[in-house]
Length: 192
Image (tube, rainbow, N blue to C red; front, side):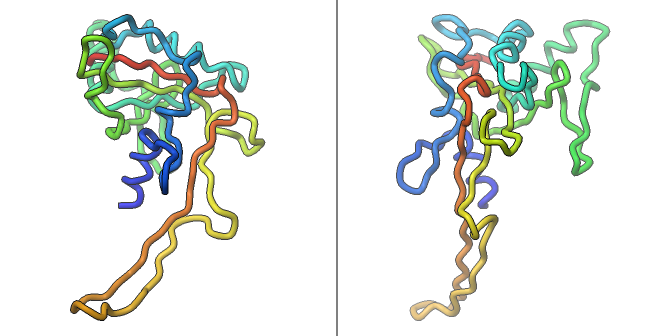
């Protein structure tokens, strides 16, 4: 449950109350691809432009992130090439394989909404590209945690006084920082 909440807040967090600011609010306007008045369908040109906007780390891009609907559209683009396949993958340290575009891993995050509005389009979504910070506090995005309280904390509270149940408190103190405006980019208004 905490993992799903983090994935949601990573994208949609507004920085109010107990929520940290997510990618939707951290990407500056100058780092957003123009997809037209009413948005556009996914294309290799959009992906190329998105990767080109990330200037940190000498143009090295650590990730692309998109909704599963857009990932299926990416696969359709590859199949339309004729001889190309969808076998261009990278293996994560966990052993899981994920797709890549121009050597950049593509992460699926279904918390990126597909009902965003762009002009007359009300079924748009956003693709993100960026860098992870290398620990220097200078590049891209980085997860943050409270000093001395890193990770997920589980505390047994005990039996409820009013019900026949046991109470367990699960908590995680975390946030997200964007250390460089040139380390993140977005393509809003993707229609497929």
